[in-house]
Image 1 (tube, one colour):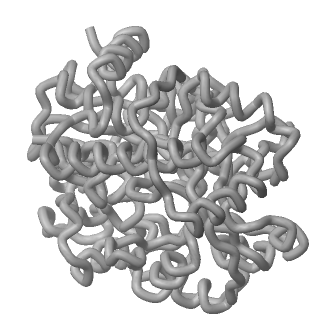
Image 2 (cartoon, chains in turn orange, purple):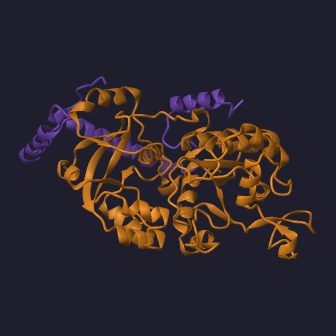
Image 3 (cartoon, chains in turn red, green):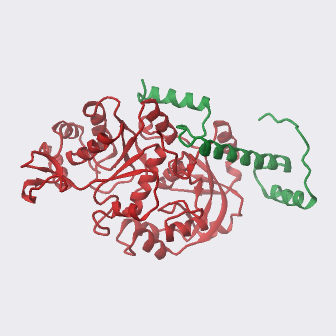
Length: 382
Length: 83
């Protein structure tokens, strides 16, 4: 059984090539707004149905209810505002109902936005509700404070449906839904990652695969922090997992171009909704999902689902996993009675340090073949 | 797109004048007829989408046609996702 998409509509705002060409021909007659690479990702995700039921940037009614109540104006659960911020002078020059060209930083047309709403917002209110903090040291809060003062809402129509980089690993929800069906998967577990695979993550994936027909590995691709694995390193190592470790036809790898907001629990909800749209019936939420620093509780990303109505996707709330020397296997506090001295966690610092030095990470933390593959690949950190 | 005259649509003067004003300010539409046609297309498309998702919520391809589905299958095969 494949789940209905969120809001029961799988959005498709991708123009046919003929319609896209029609807009390209008249692009210079339209007002143009240049959007950065991260907003281009949002525009494409909206158009391709990744953010269903959103059909464009939020108007004021949706925006305010999302910020305050985690719901769209019609009551559908939605945790994070998706908005287009512009200078006041730009907003003043646009009339409601006007089609505006959204251009990328190379000044090429990306999409048409039909403006339905123009409004102002209070950054501190958004920060307090969405990020549960006003601290501008939080990267998501910093993004909110850096926004321009006016917001434009309205539906978008995608002109540029290119998928570079990683075109060959970038599937839309309609593609994954058909793929899962073709593979005969009735249940699919989604796994979100921003790292090369280590044993602890593999353990979570195996748990997911034990209770479902298929595993959908869906790494977030895009802007990184210094010290993060590069997109290439993540994909190369997961290609190995999909082709050499998991049984044939039980795992699929496809990327998710998405800007991380680090909104912790709210972002965990967004990630679950996105995977629901891809056709997943289950989604793994581990410790500190989409968190940063010490802003959120270790399991806040799991607990938030208890406060929401049924989202229509089963959340697998899994504990922090580690290698236990006594058990001689990966386990969690739920399945292992031994103390911390017996346990080796997947320390990101240790993994990074060893790989940078060209050393194989201990096999209880990372598969030796993954270590080898990453060392040979070189330049694996941002 | 090929257009066919099926019936004349009668609009009251006030509505027609409002539509004319919108079209006058529009960069996308040349006349009221093309604007009304666009609106009707949108309404019909929305209805079809709603119908597809509410009647067959487990449909795997949402509101996509058989031709689109074939295209998707072809892409999945070319990328090695399907045999």
